[in-house]
Image: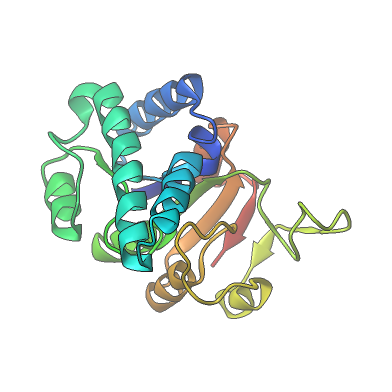
Length: 224
């Protein structure tokens, strides 16, 4: 199976959790050893948002803020790639061509942001589209997708399954903002819907959820 694993910055980078990053590295090695092709996309988390704030205070525009955030995400990608060792590519992928080439060489792709105007969610979706992935897995800071934001609505209900058609109705944000933080961003939804890549959103603080989702177990929220 060809997989794209999106590890949220809110999970491993807010604050930086080296123990969890190490667990993810071991998990990716296991998945690779099982014969799967794997691409990993990491977010910049709180560090990216902090630097977006600094850029904003300096009077820099949205594009500049995004570029700073991308640099932060690529720092985490570099750390993760080094931790992976030999199974990973020689460098962090910074284009979709890089990602495709790395997979063709039989290595694990690791990347952060791609270009201003899109989040790392959208990057993961674009990679999935480019390499014809079978499944996109997102480790988030929630148990899955809810009918409304569970952080501010105690009565929010987790959805086990969701069709693409009903997907976008759940999300309040529909335009890109630097540092946007929601369960999956609107641009990613459009790409996934276009290519019909199945997405499973799980609690990323438990890396074993990613393995369970790959094995087809009922975990998190499946969007297809």
